[in-house]
Length: 129
Image (cartoon, rainbow, N blue to C red; front, side, top):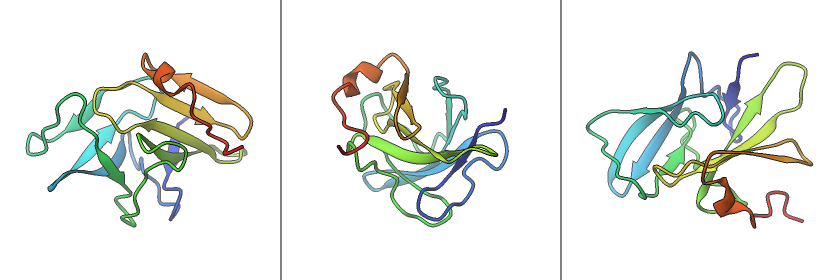
């Protein structure tokens, strides 16, 4: 089944083809980042004009509406939606720290972690309770 992602603010599709496309900012530098839609796959495509070093915090935003994608649950995470036919949308939270491998899929009651660094976020209250 295809992994379809959308902006939680405007609903725009973020992966119109094979990669998730996000606008990114680091200080005054801006660029686009293409991410794998497969949870746990941390390969990315970044143009050489937007270099990032491990540990740098990246600000992600929707390339369609420009709204920031920073998670309300934790400022070190970004949030988008996973949309699958016949299912309610699920929140997907992932690390904004370049090189940190942590992704979480939330279905309203459960959190499914992916990545070697997911344990860094074990105390995050994703549901605001």
